[in-house]
Length: 261
Image 1 (cartoon, one colour):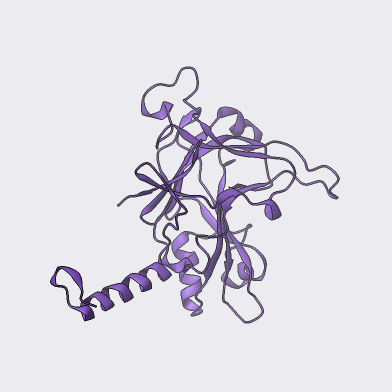
Image 2: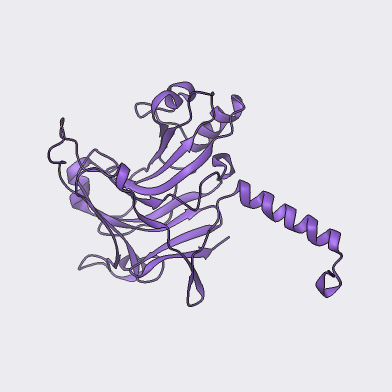
């Protein structure tokens, strides 16, 4: 079989091999259909096994700012929609009764991806003054990765959580919040103790990666989610989740995938 456009067969094979290696290292989209000219991933939704209580996480239009907000901060940064989150109460019939937690994520497209291959992470958030009154300026949604930390043979699961800093605006859409440069990261369980990136003492993203590299560990991803962990009541929205060169645009009719640089 001849390669088209005069490209030699060996060159085609090498290019295909390089593409396969890149796909194994860096997060990228895995699509199940298209919507007009925007690829769409159908593997996003509430993760039942890690969601606690009866919170709400739904794809919606808006929010379009508070009544006195105008300009770019008055509309979602991508398209017309966003991921609306309501984590508002306690979970019934659970002892002790914890605050609700919601995980809206993807358990399919990122399995086996290299955590250390991540170089750009973050999102935009619609934060309200009331949320700040509930839990302070850092009462914010999170990004969570379920991972295999690969620190030793018996430690094959941990959760990695980003704790954002305060949003620079309230009752409006924030600019992009870069999780590799702001806020802190922690790991659950033994992985947190080994890397010294714990909920009590979060690490920067560069320190987190260095902790794995120092131990020659190669952590891989199981799932990715936008979450609200069990701390304070929060009602707001998130849009434009970024993982490397891909932005996941939350729209009412699905999660669209945009390539950015």
